[in-house]
Length: 411
Image (cartoon, rainbow, N blue to C red):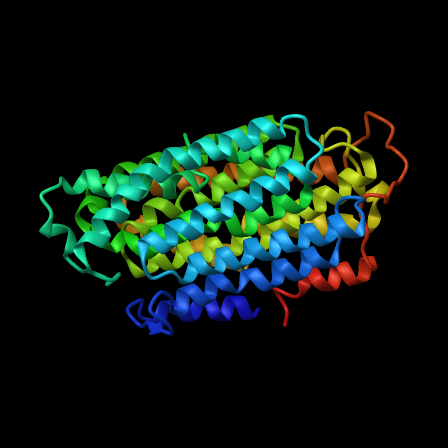
């Protein structure tokens, strides 16, 4: 519950309150809130193994993940867009190594290529933005008018700033690398992607978009309409697919699509709801990917049809599946519930059409949840389940797993 209380306190914290502890880093309430995901993710991943590897490979995995966590923390605390770009680019390298080395999927080369290509596509315009920013000779200050000293078109500079950040978001038309990476990556890599990597683009928008208030207001309405429509589309797509990792990846797109337009509104309720969604999604999604990895090591399949009736085959994990499905939907009093409540509060005053579409997508999500629960927990098996095989997953005990899972919610 401590995350919920900390989340509510964000509404009463001014985002102009900073604490500079060096010339390159800055800490505020939002940055520290986002950093709270890193230690828990690192502790959980270091406690469990997802592949049968030797001690040397295990040490390499933990070193790569620790390096990735340090780079993500540096990106959250960066005060300059150029330093943020450096940290953002450096996080891609260990992630690609983790996918290539520890993934068993045959399409891992294609997924890494997609990730690198989209990252390179957005890095070049963002580098031009950083050069213009450094030419102004200013540090990052909210509301500064540094852009007015240039003769460049403001919207072009804004586009160069925002392209790389959108490529890190699970936003429609930029989501192809995300679904491929999740399907091709191992369970641990999917947990890292969902809990840490997807938060960099949205947090970068939150931290630096105030430099472009005029262009942000101009495009906000169109982006919000596209985001609400994408939420509705991917809710329907989730019902059509049977790969559990692909379904969770689509769920990430559904939850994180509205972060981009709502950050551009610069309203307290919308921004607080976006930050709550970032952290709430980071806490829930990595546990969902862990559960899918556990089920895969048991049945050697990620198909929903193959893994029907878990209640009769894996009784120990069925309660966690049931619980975190509802938490992913937005069960009160956890973070996703408050974020969706803030979303609805903002849309009531902004657009009735957006509120209706968003409410309709929530209804489809509830229908999808009922289908998932009926299939996964109580469905009738079509194929005979494989015998239990725990050679690929090692953990201390299931009771310890349950204890670790509940740490973020009850302290």
